[in-house]
Length: 263
Image 1 (cartoon, one colour):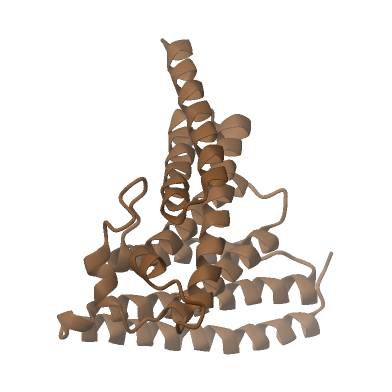
Image 2 (tube, rainbow, N blue to C red):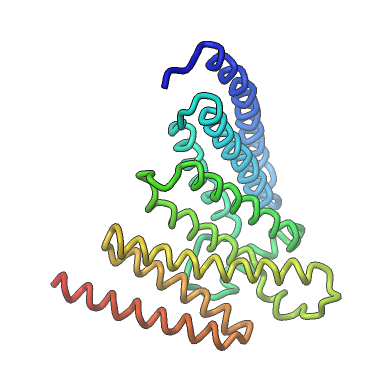
């Protein structure tokens, strides 16, 4: 469908403002990177700050696509692809803060968590929710028939791991009084992370079943369940623990059968 000159001009005018904001955010990111070299003690907070700026850019690129669809009836895949690439940068920043390790001890990064104590449970929860919203918007903007469909489990898996590694399980075990500050924020994030790990594991399983047939996807699905199983054990959730064990055993059997078939 042809787009008239007036509509194009309106669109270009609107995205020009958004591009200005993105350029300003680039300057902010550069300034944060420079400042981070001068204060090692605050380094994790610089990484979080950069991740937050990147997230704002992601939303702006998605906004520009949505504007293109609304005004001109055309999806702007270039903007969506840029937003998708920026998520990888965001997770690289967060990896430097809490790691992206899977199937490890729940307290493997306790020293790193001690360094970001001022980022209280409510701030962690809000950060997680904002990143989650960004991924939801990106997936929705691409639509069902996108070629990137089977790359989305990676985004959800990374978010689940960031959430899992942001949680301080020493606090969860030691601060069980509902009157304690941030008690409900901690519990809400714990619940969200448990659901996220289970969902991401299922998505990797579906990716294996429907798309790649790569045992690496099934192995990662299993590792996500192993993390969830550790949380279930820590919180005394026996039912969830059994569910995870059943899933892990099933994945192990499937991987073994897959390897046998390949031989």
